[in-house]
Amino acid sequence: MQEHIETISPRPVLIVTGEKAHSRYMAEESYNRLKDPKELVIVPGATHTDLYDQMNLIPFDKFASFFKENL
Image (tube, rainbow, N blue to C red):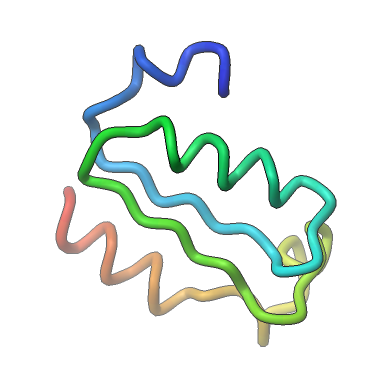
């Protein structure tokens, strides 16, 4: 995603990453290169893989509000 970020921006982008995710730095770098509208959600205590199946950690409310506002 980072190599082509200019081709998707300035479309609405929601980036979700875990606080303890090894890939968090990529999420933050991508977020910083994007133009608005954009939102970065860092899930406290979560790793990358926690956000696949730990239903209590997945920020469904954030998905709903972001898509309701931007679609």
